[in-house]
Length: 237
Picture 1 (cartoon, rainbow, N blue to C red):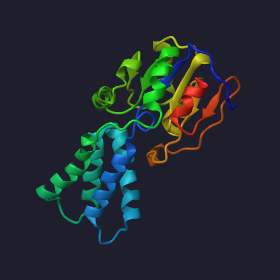
Picture 2 (picture 1 turned 60 degrees about the vertical axis):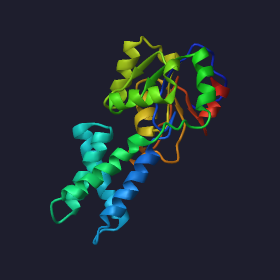
Picture 3 (picture 1 turned 90 degrees about the horizontal axis):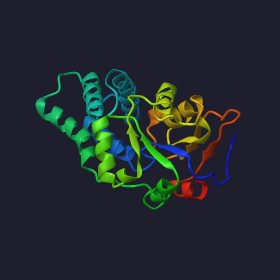
Picture 4 (picture 1 turned 180 degrees about the horizontal axis):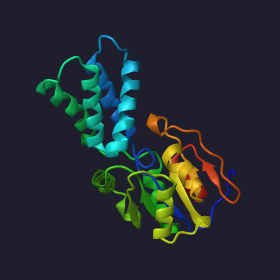
């Protein structure tokens, strides 16, 4: 059921990172646009190449997980499968460059995060729960300047119901006072609800398309709150 009242202090907030606390997918989208333009396929449209890349990324995630190395692998595999000849060293290096360019962006906090997160940390227990490459995610957290507000960091390979159950057991979390906060229906909202937790959905206009999914309704005893921005967290928590 929906929930809009102010929640009492002492909650545990599991917070997603990418596209919840800071910008992330927009940089991948820029790299993909550059890649598709560089490929300039004579037979397939940009939309068809993107669809093909989505399929390759699904394969890569299953085999290699998330992170820049996996993204780079996907670009190379996509290029190879759509090319009629092997990739020359020069083109290979250019494709690698598209992926590596992402790591050079500064961390850009989303609106409200810098102001609201310290206040949340003063009233609640905050645990960062974000999937991806563990080193990359922890590095982004340190560069963000937000690390001091979290009592723990969890970087599961996949954020499915079992991952939430594991964290719930590891930290002895009470499901009645534990919330998952994130932008992804597929990784943040639906699996957290399936694991018996509450959830706060903060949509991002550029959420990775492989994370798109219909938001499931909260069951009896659960709360699902949908906010327009992170700023609103301060009014509810």
